[in-house]
Length: 494
Image (tube, rainbow, N blue to C red):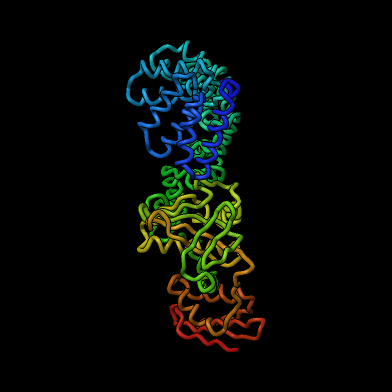
């Protein structure tokens, strides 16, 4: 059906209703939808049903879906079929799905095919899957591939054709199954190519399958790369265990512990991340102090799409969304791994620099999409420390967090706005900043001090019990250490 079949005035009311809904004026939208239906536009009833469903009014949604479906709106017939199927009434579901399919609805055609397959009517199901494919359903092609495949015992050549078609439309599961078919046909190179494609499309099992295949071929380097991707991108616990065993076998117990706990509850950072973060800790703390003073502690609002953060009556630009921490499950989620954003969002794109740095320097905290931090004594603080250390790679003005979900989580932003201050070496604050930094990273005080001097462009002179830095502005920082490497005295001269 097209809008030409309905009275123009009714269609106009429907479009006004949809605009009002998009702009958050639901009461107005509701009245306009009703008027549109009464004026002769059943499609308005379908959209009204969608609006009610979005607001949790399932009974109201069903009333309007039914009204639209009975007047020939195929998409509404699908919704009715889905409702009846969820209630267990297969006969009513079939009746509505057939009306949806007869009206050219892709989802109704697909679900009718699946229903008939479950009943054992494969010829009819396959005909409907073909119709759904012609209507644009990649899932239909996947299902045709699966039926021809028949667990590796069927028509593999035809199965491969249908899996290929589905994969061409972005179906990750089809690309993965295609790899199995290629293997069954004896083409290992095509098998690996299909699984690479599946992993790039987001199929969770593909990365680990590639790791297993490369290990079988004796290519340990490629196997390790895909094990890392299996954990970093898909949270594969089996892959994490294999990585842990691998590091254990090399005698690297710290990294073995990290990978073993990465998905179940980290209690420490990896050794390389600890070194990276501690080296930049003094400068990062100093920058955070300046940012905190500039922003204050008032109410904060943000617009991720516009990359802005507003507080104290001022709006700052250049905002990058780093990620979020949940107090409920104590996990950190990098923004690139958040299904609501992804790599291509303008406020997330800058994080590619962080991920690339993490890959280049083997810092898994910067490459694993979701980290369970529940093993830390203070998981929220661990997330904050990690975000600040990573944010320093972007330059700019530091990291600011905002509580979300009624205080059950926090979202972290990096700011890069010329209106905000950038820290320079401060000889008056240097001693206090060093002591704060070694409290956060107590394992190597000397690294903390070296990192401070290097960050601000100082020349380092080092002896067993002292490190001295001379800065371009003529300032000198001298730090004395105990025999076991702890800071014992700091002198800052101007």
